[in-house]
Length: 142
Image 1 (cartoon, rainbow, N blue to C red):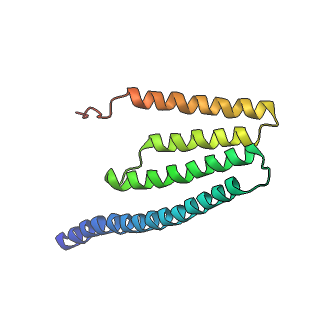
Image 2 (cartoon, rainbow, N blue to C red):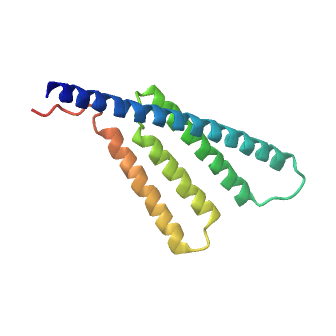
């Protein structure tokens, strides 16, 4: 009986460690892919700036926001490793706000959609404010 309990305890230790290793490797590969795509965006910006063609400013702004989204995802992965394998919620909110701003810039044909995107940004900002005013340390339950 005691032997079975030891095996169960070992499995309870090994399984989370295995999945943590898989997660860490996957996030590392994702960060490398995002870094490559970030450099591709930089090259695209340079070509856009050096080009003599007249480009739509909306296209340029949309690409800038995509660049920032890559940057924010990479930053979030770095924070994950720095903060003991924890994703800070505020980075998801940054990404959400940036994505909504990009949608407003790119797809502003419908006034109702633009209003809804703006309301989503407002909700994310209110949520971010609430996160910042609440204490980080939670009281221990008795």
